[in-house]
Amino acid sequence: MSFRLSLIGFCLLLFGGTAYASPCATVKSRSDEWVTANIDALVRSARAAYEKDEALPAYERVLDGIANTLRRCKLSEDQGFISRYRVFIEYIEAASLYRQPDHELGFIVTDKQYFAETRQYVQIPEFLMDQGFLRSVSRFETLERAKSFLRRLNSNREPSEQLIFFSYRSRHLGTPDSKDSYGRLLIVVPGNAEKGVPEKWVQFGVPDSGARARVRNVSVVSAILGSDGTFNAYFKDFYRTYRRDRSISIDGRWELGYGDDKCVQCHKSGVLPIYPAPGSVNASEQQAVMEVNQRFLTYGSPRFGKYVDETKFGPGLSSASWDDRKRRFGVAFEGTEVAKAMTCAACHQEERLGALNWPMDRIVISSYIRGGQMPLGYELRSSDRAKLHEKLIQEYFATDKANPGILKSWLLSRLQ
Image (cartoon, rainbow, N blue to C red; front, side, top):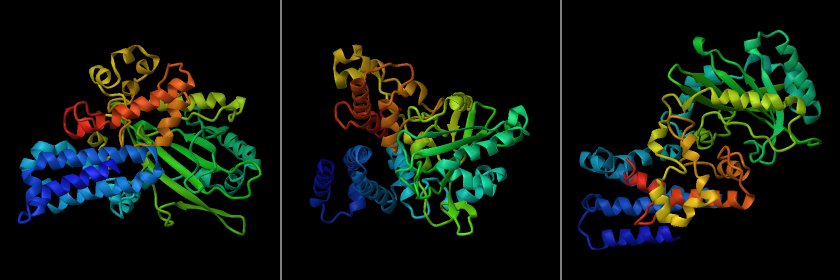
């Protein structure tokens, strides 16, 4: 409510005494005030949306309002305005793409164009479309039968082409079609970088033991490795359709009319490492979990083809300087275990695993930090992990005028 009132108050101040001036002319003449007020409103609403899903519509109204003003007043074409606020303009343009009806994925091109152009990378391998396998993988009780099928495939594959697979329960995420379904079967299908063949992470949602409701989702994340230490990641969700004759068909979720999600909001690192719920992986498959996570680390820095430029979203969690941190939390904070663990940006930056910047998924970020997976190498008490998450979010979303946080500083171009 505070950011909404402050923005309304600024608008009254800005337009109340200029009855004969057009709104766009007033924005241009008092551009610093307009930009600062809208950055504050955007960052505050973004933090509220990160912390609570119910606050997302308010954030989207702020984002839409800024984008509409930039467009209506042609500020993105005004060279003087661009020279002063380029970072802000490019951020709004990139962040607001998903608000267009044909850009649910949040990419530069339409969803239809993205899926058409990346089809060759994200198709489910034909051997995983076997009807017997699809029936087996669609029930918890027959999951071992599905794994036996995969083992038979491996018996005829070269060592470099061996499928890596295991079943597990997710710690934090259901499937797009069933929010309470946490079972998974992950199959990593090796690629060939020299031939441009993508490595595919194919993941089937699996219902709980005894569950009668079907889980439909199958997700594919592909990785095409480059020669420059980077890889391009591509995404697609599929839905299974269970027919009365026991046959199972698989089609794209978007093509079936169920829409899609902003993939990069969760997949900042392109492919996500797998941290199963404790006790959910068979002892015989523990090695496979280690193998896929080690494989992920060999891919390099994530890129997303020509479809999104993550640099437009700025630096991420923990990228503040120690001076900023001491001003915000006090000199004594520097020696605490929580402060020492605020090291996300050591790995999560453009040239490594991708920055953890807004928009980002609260469930993914929070569960990795509170669950002990991030940052690597730090043994913290549960209470300290909760504080760590709190401090990281406070530092990132702070809107203090004297000591703005990471996001506001970036939008004001103070971190360039």
